[in-house]
Structure formats: C-alpha cells, structure tokens
Amino acid sequence: MESETNMTYEFAKYPDGTLGVFSNIGKKENNEEYIRVSFERPTKNGFDTYVVELPSYEVVLEDGNYSEEEKKNFMEIVKNGSSFFFKYARIGGLQIA
Image 1 (tube, rainbow, N blue to C red):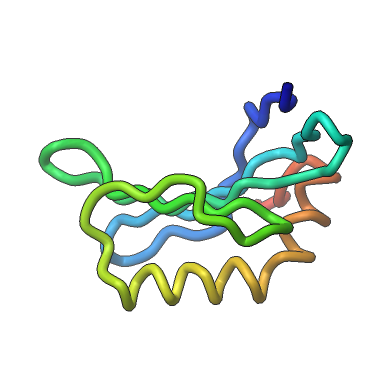
Image 2: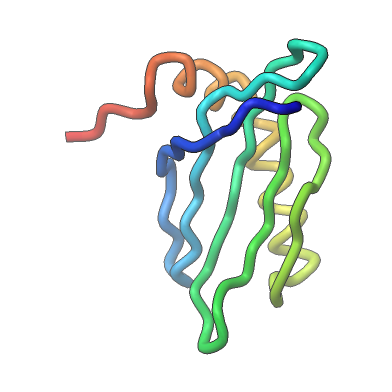
C-alpha cells in the first residue's frame, strides 16, 4: 500500500488560472519515495487536470482539455524542477512572504 500524499504546496499560478502544486513525499510499498506534481485549471464543468509522478515522470492523471503543447510544457516544468520539488517537499513547502 502506498502512503498518502495529503499535503500540497503551491508553486505557480498561471494567467489562464492553472494552479501548479506539488505533494509531500509519499512512499510506495517498496519504500520508493515519490511526489505528485499537479496542474489544475477551473472550467465551467470542473477542472482540467494533469498530474505527473516523480521520479518516474509517469502521467498518473489526465482529464479535461489541456492542449498537447500545454502538457508538453508541464512535463518540461516537472523535469526541470524535479530536485526543487523533492527539496521543498522535504522541508514543508515554499516559505513565501
């Protein structure tokens, strides 16, 4: 059983309303640590959602109407920020004044 990743930490809010958040560190049954990085944008009928798990870079949830270009950009953000997400998940998120 995987441990829960309940806490999330905001790292970006984009002009189109997309919110970027990352989870605290979870542990899988094999003790592998993971983080989920989520992008969500409110719509009339709910949310556009794109969730990537680190360190595998597996897309674990994709729902709504993000374009292929947007999804490509999100994956680049996740890949470029991988160490950032793990670092700040370990210390409890970003301390923004």
